[in-house]
Length: 281
Ligand SMILES: O=C(O)CCC(=O)C(=O)O
Image (cartoon, rainbow, N blue to C red; front, side):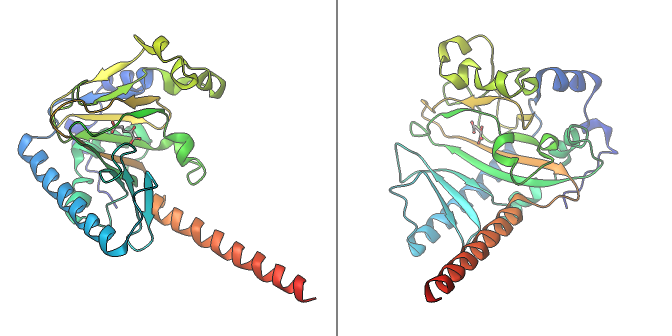
């Protein structure tokens, strides 16, 4: 379980943070982590990527035709750049594969504000992602909310909060996060007619916040906040860790997915056997 030493109020939300989070749906803290700490997380992230790439080669995971591939052996999903199919764009989830990165997830500078945002004295990971926007290669992430993706596995989705930690300096040029303040309060019909979702992209301008920040910046946002990010048009990588927390007592997404897959497999086998019995009869 992620320990949450929130007795240390230095890292909790201030009244102003609370007001902003409720109104705008996100919170940003620049300089939450030091450059040296980011370098150490980059090292752990890159060694995880190298390890997984090795597995991809030995397991012969087909990377050409898909922009996402899951590995049953490693229990994770690798994402590939659409335009550059040999480049990994992300790894979701990784806490079971990297002890150093798992340990960072329990840092109070990440979990502190989450306790309140999740409405729980203790928080645990729901899922975690490493997003790699490689120099000149990293593509954009389209506008979306995370909630609808998670809801089938997590009925408590409204209490899941993500802490995004920039490992590199993040700017508009290299594809920093862009959020739509207040969009977490939109209802369903509101969101599907939102110009960003319905394709009237030019109308989106002026309604969003482009969250530039140096390495070590953390952004917290709820699962209903509309967000996106641009391509990396710079000569430097833009890497980020995204830790999504939920109230303690809920299972990790990886285990929920595994259960769902097992159920699907059992149902398929049952139906196949029933069909075979009917054919014989
Ligand atoms: O890494 C980014 O810029 C976008 C993150 C995001 O929205 C996601 O991974 O769902």
